[in-house]
Picture 1 (cartoon, rainbow, N blue to C red):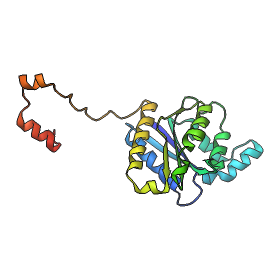
Picture 2 (cartoon, rainbow, N blue to C red; picture 1 turned 180 degrees about the vertical axis):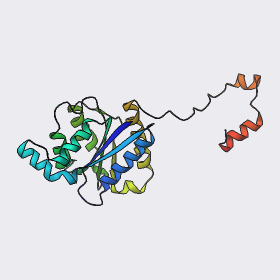
Picture 3 (cartoon, helix red, strand yellow; picture 1 turned 60 degrees about the horizontal axis):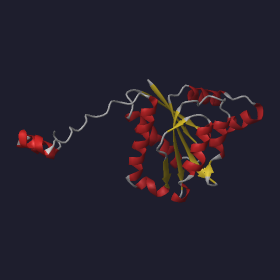
Picture 4 (tube, one colour; picture 1 turned 90 degrees about the vertical axis):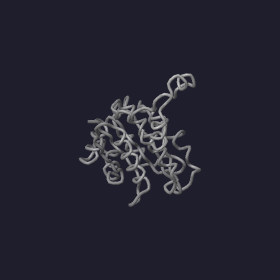
Length: 206
């Protein structure tokens, strides 16, 4: 079974960051044959993260979250945008991971903000961070401004990125039946397609 770990750094409750993380997780599960989805909410680990920075030892909840990430087949990492970059809470979590934990792990990056002006955070902050950690970053990142949650384009981007993450895990669900290749004019003249079959295609039944 494929284990997908969703790391969300939203601070408010409810949180648009958590909402985006949940939608990405659900779409990824749809793209996999069998999947286990684990949510790591960094808001609940804030105190233990600070203690870990000061002492070098993780508390029990943080240690469990780190082990979930270590055992993951794929990671979905979602952060709110603070000062044109990822949040301090988000960065702290990935700072405390031991070297090599994310080596070769597929990671889908995503971020939320109030306006579209921060959309480049995916490319100038998140992608370099995970490249430095030797993760395999999914080609499509997902940025969601407040207004994006009311539109259809966000859903299309979510499913595209989720499908790419599923493919990188090597355990994607089989694709739907492929559309038959278009026949040439010569083939149609030599052996015309029956009219009933054309009607079924037009109605979506074939």
